[in-house]
Amino acid sequence: MLAIKFTFTANRYHATQWGRHVNEGVLEWPPSPWRILRGIVATWRRTLPDLAPDRVMSILKALASECPKFHLPTASTGHTRHYMPYHEGVKERTTLVIDSFVAIRANKPVFVVWPNVELDSQQRADLDRVLHNMPYLGRAESWVEASLASEYPEINVYALESGALPKGDWEIIRTLMPRAPIKLKDLEVETSTLRRSGRIDPEGAQWWPYVRKADCFTEFHATRPQPRRHGAGATVIRFAMAGKPLPMAFDTLRWGELARKCAMAQYGRRNEGARSPKLSGKDSSGKPLDGHRHTFYLPTDEDGDGRLDHLTVWTPAGLDEQEFKAVVSVNTLNPRGQREPIQLAYQAHGKEDDFAGVSPLFGKSRRWRSLTPYVLTRHVKFRGPKNQRRMVDSPADQIGREISLRWPDGPSLVRVESLDPRERITPIHEGRSSGFRPFDFFRYKQAGSNGGGAFNFEIEFEEEFPGPVLLGFACHYGLGIFVPVQ
Image 1 (cartoon, one colour):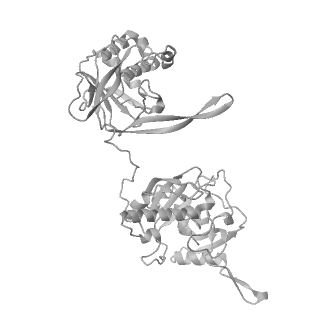
Image 2: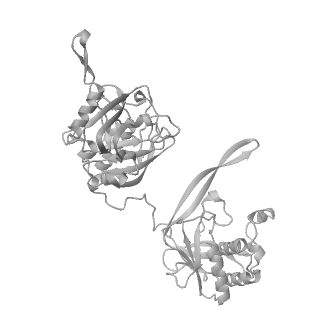
Image 3: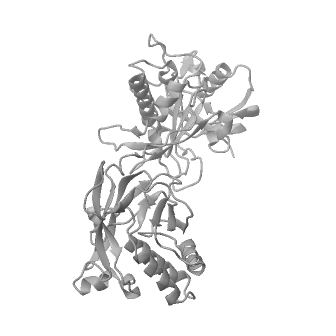
């Protein structure tokens, strides 16, 4: 008995059945014996040229002498689409290429078994050397680890010998086999050579009927990865944003509001129309919650290109399990209208300390600066006679009052510096964008309006203070974000 184990390390097997066009999407499953022998020859030629041809041929003849049997793991199918460039005269055009593949569970190898083939010790050692050098089986993206196996699971694919299907739910598939006596030149032939000679099938190959389970592609369904822990008690959830194009950084408020709507909608669908006060920021009567312990939806530009690329959902009071599941199930933000939808990819969840080195929102510093503009919650007022008028509720007064109410136990605020509103707000990291002016930012909610202008502040506490620092109008949706001064 001889058995070979193939483990596809990328959990995918890319191979189109011989003679079919790649865009037909016809997958070869199981890997054909003809392909396996060609893979052995290719690996030998490229990595072990010192191995004598007669020693390799003795192995190939033994493998070609019998129809092997297979054990296939549970699998599914998938494909990707690529628009590959090509030149038509002086013009460059694109053509669609469909890359179909078999998706295999992690650590579930394919076993190929020749029940009646026996190799001597030298042949087994030579074959083992070749298999250990094999980088892929099928197309180049089918990364594989191959080795000899001393045992194997139950056989579930085999050659049809009698012409009658076995009992049960089976199907017949055409599988390309080597034909004895096998010749090395037949295994090394290029498809271009075959086409020039008017052939499709190689000289030394033959089609043979095999049987496999009819449901071999339905037992495993790929699903969107979910966090391993149930998430109850989490205060921070991080997403990456993906889209073409990504939204501009000055549209923070629009996308923060949309993230809130989507999280509330998911919660309602999962809980018979119920509403979560922490996700919505309102109690059962619709009154806004006090204390800022409910959820903040914070889109940010973290690579400095002027476009939003991350969404941080922060709930100081912590989420319960149903709220957590609702938030992580949001995978698309669709604003409809003229704007393209944005995809969300869940990254991680945890507590604030878990993200101290990941996002500057959760840093610690004495000095903090605006990342998005601080928008006044009330209009600035002037009091006194005409020639002695004084400003009441100035921007600096409003931010100082809000900090004292938000953190009554300190630390104390020692400095508030309002920068020129014509200056651009510096991004988190230096990149292709130089930032935007405070008044460039969208500042109007669908429900409610702001009290005054937009400002760029730098504030300083008497001692180091941990973030997030979020202040002013619409701070729950991405305005009024402060980050540590480097």
